[in-house]
Image 1 (spheres, rainbow, N blue to C red):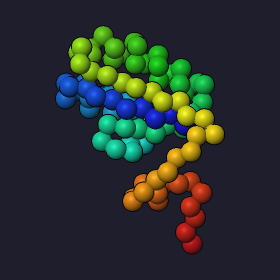
Image 2: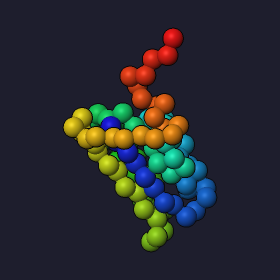
Image 3: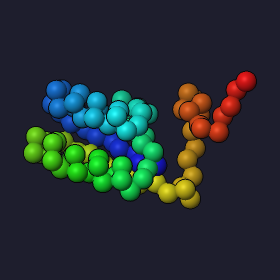
Image 4: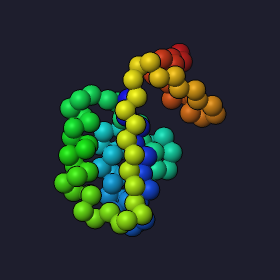
Length: 90
């Protein structure tokens, strides 16, 4: 799984970036997305960031990509715990 967190000051660029990320995953928090990981998806995301977004970033803007493995332990509370894939309600 990829977790992508961003802090972009320009409203239009931030909106465009969030729409770009929504093609690959879903929003966990306002500026944090979860994306199902594969080598192909990661390379596409990184290439698009470098080609289409990086030149427009201000000095204070930042994007952090966390590449999580299956061994990572994730604890969720509140509404977030309902987002687990293993949860089945009949």
